[in-house]
Image 1: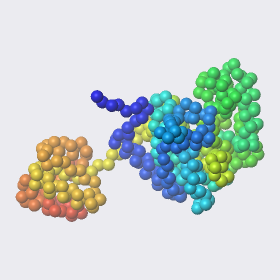
Image 2: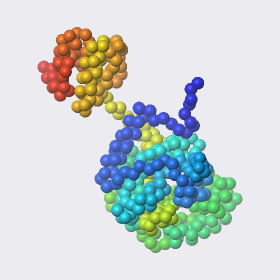
Image 3: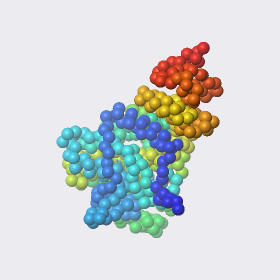
Image 4: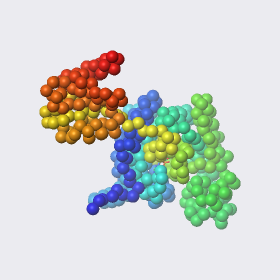
Length: 426
Ligand code: HAM
């Protein structure tokens, strides 16, 4: 009996993983320019880490965590996101003592028990960045420019970055009050979830996707009108620096985030080609978080992009994920030829060449068919005649011609390439 994979947990097959490798390689290139260092974080953490950071009343913590008791009773969870883990590691290793401004990036799987649909999985992968130790607007702008550079490096064409300010510990309570007052006034028009959110987490009223709630939204109070002068200045400076750098931001006054730790600058990237799950990334500032998890009183900011959604957007744009093609396919026939082919293949590989080799017990026809499928430019044929003559035959797959005795059976790759080039010129 076949054992299927688990709902919401997908395989990334080779045709798709090439795209992922491209995304990761481009991201690494950009992170290098911004002087970020990689951190590799565990996928299992104590469940409390997320309860205390993401927030008890968020969907992630309330409904979506894969939390379980370890055999010794410790309350653990598969991580639903990376920020809290990065903060935990920063605090645990007192990273501020070696590097007052710590700039980290990570790749890896996250787990949320959501209802699976296109672009929404239970295991998904993020590319994330976190900066600890700065709370000035220039770093927020730097992070937004980095985000824009990443999207460009990936070849994402149609993304827009929406920003908002969520205020700070001083001005948020006033905004919350205004929001609750507004919600109470419209209580009967709100959906059931929002009626419940009204007391527990009123900011989430602004984020509701139900028609009756979105219809009301334009009359809701805006954080931008309620935040204090410092938060407003901060926001304006962030927007100003991004504009100066030519990075376009769309102010979305009702945008809030699904995680509770944010303050001041918050942002979300949306792209077309995704349907309902159109957010390919999101992030923001989280100034109280490090302190609340036992660390120093330093600011933090970061974002994460979802790999699956980036891949879907690129697919919708018609961007092919180029599969690497071997330069040579070595086709032996018979055992003696197989030995010679085996040695030649490993000689070439040691020289840094991508080579595929098949079994000497297969027919030349079937080996050629496979080489054709792989779109290999050259097949090195070694049969009984070649072994006897101590030389190789190379089939040029594009010209559909065989070059006999083009090189000795013990040839190095450089000599073979030169011989092939000389023949092509002739
Ligand atoms: P988030 O908005 O929850 O933020 O997730 C970031 C991105 O992860 C989303 O925009 C989406 O692309 C992807 N994502 C989230 N859930 C799923 C899912 N179920 N299936 C597929 N993709 C998904 C965070 O996680 C924050 N930790 C980001 C951050 C970093 N903020 C500050 N630093």
